[in-house]
Length: 374
Image 1 (tube, helix red, strand yellow):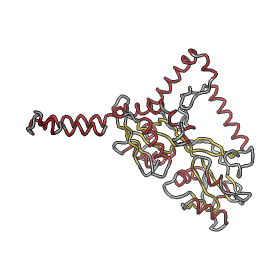
Image 2: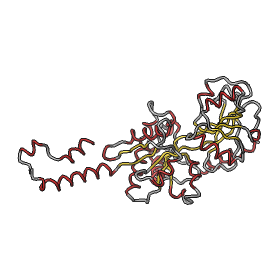
Image 3: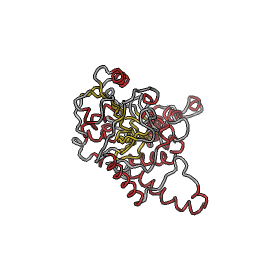
Image 4: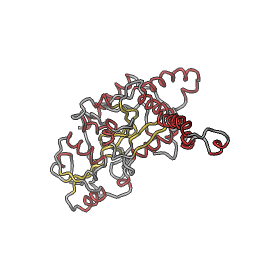
C-alpha cells in the first residue's frame, strides 16, 4: 500500500517523461496534487485509531493482535497506539483526535462521572476482552476484611490496574487502610518475613497468578473473600482450588469480583464516517475471532465470549446488530443441517443471547451464593 501511495504522489518516472509526457511544471503540478490528495484520502478512509496501553501490559498486546487479524489493506487499517494505560484511554477516547476505539477498564469510567455526567452515553463497548480478578492476599493473623483497617496494604506500582482499581474498591468497601505503592515482589517478601508490617497485597489481574502457583506459602496465608451487593461496573467471580491448589483447599472457592477489560468505542452518530469505520472494525473482529483463539495469540482470547455483557454500559449499535443477525440466522442454519445440533460450537462462533429463563436461573444462583456466603 505504501508503494502504491508513493507511486501516485511521485507521478510519472523519468523514462515516461522522456517518452513524451508533459514536462512543464505548470502542466503537471495540478494533476500531481490531485493524485496526492486521492492517495491521502484512500490511506485515511478506513483507518481506525485504537488506544492500547503501556508496552509491558496486556491491553497493547490485545490491540496489536486485533490490528493483525482485521487488517485488509485499503479496506481496513487499524493503528494500535501506545498510551499511558487503560485508565487514561478513557480520556483519549473522549478527547484525543484520531482515536476511535480503546482498551479500557470498565471501572475507570467512575473517575470521569463528575466531569462528564453523560459518559455512559458517550462511550459504548464493542467487546468484553477479559476479566481481571481481585485478589486480596493476607498474612495468617488477618481473618477478615475488617482486620485490615489501619493496616499496611500494598497496591503495586502506579500505573498498574491494582494501583487504580484497588483503592477504588477499598473505598466502596469503606476500608480505611495504609496504602503503599511499591513493587509487589518487595511487598510479598515483607509479608513472608513479617518485616515492614505489610498485612496484605492487592492484585487486580487475570487468574491464575504465577507467584501463587510457583511459590510455597506457610499455612494461614490466604485470599480474603469479597462480598458485593451492588457490583456496579464489576462482575461476580471466584478464586477456586483449581486456580490455586496450594492455597485454597480442594473443592473450596473464595468469592471475589472482577474488573472487565473491554474494547470500547466512542458513541459516534450512526451513519457518520467515524461510525462506519468502527462498524467495519466490529464486523471484521467478530467474524475473525476464531483466528485470535488459535495458538500464537494471547491465551485469554480463548475465553472471550461475544455475548458477554459489560455492567453499566450500552453496546456499540453495530456490534449489537451483528450479534442479533448471527442469532437470527443460527436456527435457520441448524434446521438445514441435522447434525449441527450434535456438534459443539467452534471457537469464535457467535452464540445466541441467553433466554429469559437462563437469566432468571443465573440470578437465582447469584442470590443463593450470596446468602450462603455469609
